[in-house]
Length: 114
Length: 113
Image (cartoon, rainbow over all chains, first blue to last red):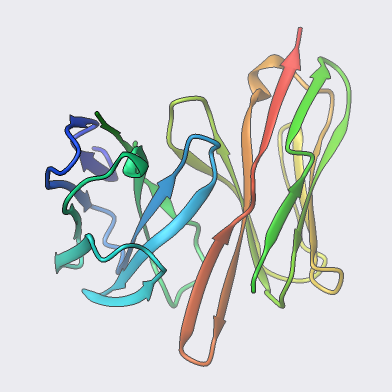
């Protein structure tokens, strides 16, 4: 069973479109994250939710909106896609408040804007 | 501003050699993590270092943490081709109700046969 699963794995779309990426974890973790990895491999946190509450909201355009229907899911919706949004987006999860466990990452969603 | 810097950014080394990757961070943290990423793949956790002086070893990799110097090292012993990957450190800062998790710039390691 995949611990952190993201869909879709690849997303190719036109500028100006709206798209969503879904993430689900079956590890029982209470915290989930979205990261953006650019073409130079820099990883930047975008959002983090703990028990469905937003705890990290880095400076990202408000075209990006996370939604956490429950603690096992954190979806990312992107409006009006731009060329600069092309990147790999990783979802991750961890358990807070315990012995400082690492984050577990999904396989990534490669977003390409035409 | 919290910064996490790794050096070198790129490392090409021969099989059998030893080398160290450095991770410096700019503010106090007691928790440091190392991850590995293979090309086109996800990130895999390698080590979690939770206190000053912590040392962890797995196979040919050994990680250590000096919180006073705000420095972690990832030492590679007798490198083999399978270790070729990008290695990231990450720092976890929790203070006054805020939480930050910052990744280093990454070190792209290539081990030549």
